[in-house]
Image 1 (cartoon, rainbow, N blue to C red):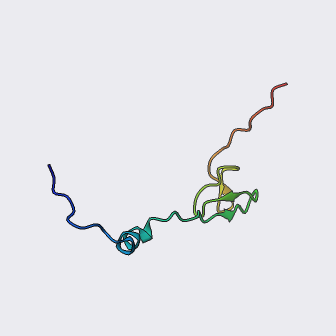
Image 2 (cartoon, rainbow, N blue to C red):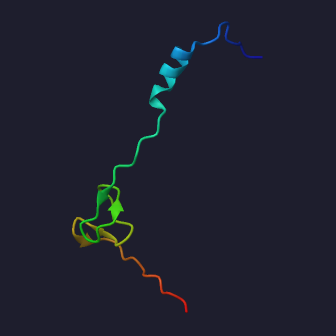
Image 3 (tube, rainbow, N blue to C red):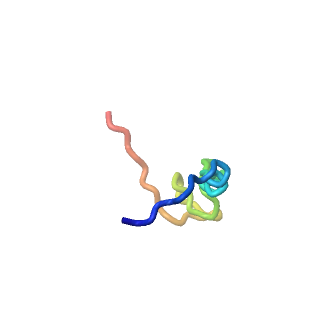
Length: 65
């Protein structure tokens, strides 16, 4: 059996260790082509453009009647 802690960690020491565990919000920027929000320095998932030119072709979904 592995060794166990001899003393209880104080709340302050426990919380200082967890100070860097908080989630950060994603930094989103508006796409220069379509205006939708996307991650910076990546291809827009909505229109497929990056730096003003089309990088990937996005297939349009057809509505079923």
